[in-house]
Amino acid sequence: MRKSAILLLGPLFVFSLAVAAHSPAPTDEASKMDEVCIPPGQWRDAKTDDPVGHDALIDAVAKRPVVLLGESHTSAEHHRWQLHTIAAIHARNPRMVLGFESFPRRLQPVLDAWVAGEMDRKEFLEKSEWNDVWRYDAGLYMPLFHFARMHAVPMVALNVDRKTIKKIRANGLDGVSDDQREGVGEPAPAAPAYLDVLAEVFTHHLSHAGAHHGATQDTKKDDPPEPVDRDDAKFRGFVAAQLTWDRAMAEALASARAAGERPVVVGILGGGHLEYGHGVPHQLADLGVTDAAVLLPWDAGRPCADLKSDAGTPVADFVFAVDAPSEPAGRPRMLLGVVITDGDNGVHVDRVMPDSVAEKTGLKVDDVIVEAAGVATAKTRDLIAVVHRQAPGTWLPLRIERDGETLDVVAKFPATPE
Image 1 (cartoon, rainbow, N blue to C red):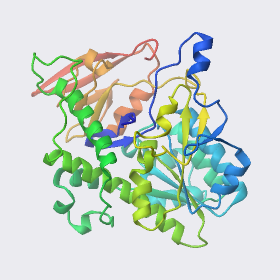
Image 2: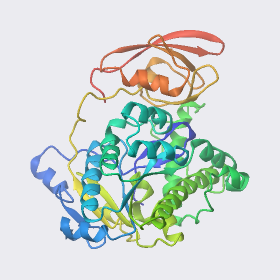
Image 3: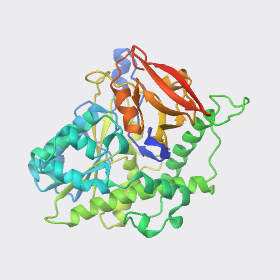
């Protein structure tokens, strides 16, 4: 089974599945060339493994009803590729709609106002609750948003609220009434291969969470995790939540296609929701959209074996090889290394990531962060904003509440981000 990297989306332990990250290629130049699966800048047909010309490919996909562009949410190179691909498709077919995983559907009026030019960047990010609902670097996405605004391309919120996903994860679909699902219908059942992927993601979470929730001394850090019991209620809830996420995005994409002048609908979402025909493509097919095109960026160093599953299913329709820079442009953002939620009196720590700044600072699960650098942190967005302002090598004083006591600790960010 091919593996996809996983990026935790906040405290719900529902994961946005992103295109896999891989170890750097060998430094020896000859070996490095041997590791290159697809030369950077080249399109490849994942079914036949043949090169495809850019113009011919764009001409073809611009005629599809839905085009799905995958990403790793933190990769600047992936977002640049998305922008270039969108611009090329738009040149062939200006009847376009852009759909974004990053927004729940309740924020659709904000997206409409942005495209209409009724707010600036700051107001848009505030009203779209960016640091609450998505939390990734907004600078990576703003060129896409500006493209939509510049060309009057409608933006569509594909997702649902996290509270909805949390309820489904806790209670299953049968335990959530129809009026609590935000209009999302019954998802098509997951294929066995997708269940394998989700089991791997779920097991990965459990193996990391165990280190912070009473793992015994006999448990070794590098021990392989136990296989997940697929009849376990927690795993079934996790699967139900993930399928609802996929279904919500598929329904929004299909609805955008059916409205108006039947535009080409381009979806911007994590690559793991797309790979090997699982996730959103599977749900779209169940809705009658059987000819959506799936395009993925292909990082330098990713092996050719990933182009097809063990069963021979292609990872996508087409992939485009990118050679991501070794360092992000601009000053890197600092990360504390916690999963957080809004608490009653501050920011509640739900999880502390291994080997993170937070762990080295001594933060623990169930701590409540009430101040950061003297700024009250009533909401998660308050803490995120303070942490993102930190420069490499700086110290950040935190005031926390733990077991009825108020403690002052200092988070020390490395001079060179890891």
